[in-house]
Amino acid sequence: MDRYALLLVSMSLGDAKQLLGFPPEVEPSAAEIQKAYRELAFKNHPDRGGDPTKMVELNVAKDILEGKQRPTYERGGPEPSPRPQGPPREPPKPQVITFEEAKSAAGVPSGVAWVFVTDVASSGYSSDEVMRKTHGYVFYGRTDSKHVFVGVEHLAKEDFYVGGGPKVSLWSMKVFDYPRHEGEIIQPAWLYGNIVKAFKGFQWVEKRFNSKVMALPDGWHFSEKIPHTNAKPISLKHFLVNQGEIAPDDPRVVSRKNTVELKVESKGSLYSYSQHSTGPKEPPVLVLNVNGKDHKLSPSDGGKFYEVYPRDVLGYIFGTYYYDGSRKTLTRLAPAKKKKFFEWMLKKLTDLPADVRQVLEVEAAK
Image (cartoon, helix red, strand yellow):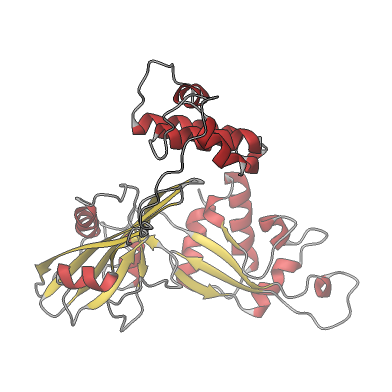
């Protein structure tokens, strides 16, 4: 008989209460038992350096207090007769509502040209015994006659403790629309207000979302899979300017904050730019993402990031270690460092488009 089984037939109800920190006269509720067990398991779990023997005792105490196999005798009493075994209990069936079922129940219309999906709103809880994750999205699209918004919520939950509930995967959706009018201009505040509206009323999604969106590829269809686009999440204001919906100098968007990111597609060769190299130079392949739009730097401009000696500019920005695929949001640098670098780019880079140079000038002047 293993230690768990031995304790299960020898531990008294009073011993179980004492192990979990309850006075003998208290009858703890299921929630109180669960809370006390989790706190003690967190301290005593072997994965966190705890005592395995103590952990087994806590598991037995929890099971006894929950009535799963409570002894009816005190320690030292006669060995109990074996209980009759009933038919094996079937595992609980998963609770599942698929994306397609939720879409059908919500009445998501066909023939919609989908424009963007919001940056995901998420929350979650995970422990040794329970995993819960929730995600929320809002899709915006349009037909010839209407604007369409779809709010989406997904709950995934799994219990790992003995006797835990079934796995859960539940999708929920709701749809609403507005008529389109000839010559209308889409307002950022109107879009954001409807994103908020699409999130309201969901049971699980916490209200941790913002106005950032990701452009959906042309021809995307509302299917079983939430798209993972390569687009960088950007603000609604920048999105509308990039899409040509609103002019950059429109009063509704003129106050938007600039976002400038530097991405290393290929490191090239720093050695080829050293003072001692006589071989062919291999410039890095760099991309400036300005307000959600990529601008690949020319080889001439890219090579200038290695020309400063002994400290190359990429090392100045990224630190000692950077790799193909490294990214840095330049507009989040410390003010002094940001100003110095933007001034350097304006002075050194000669092949920048006019609109990119204008944004860099604004940031350098701050």
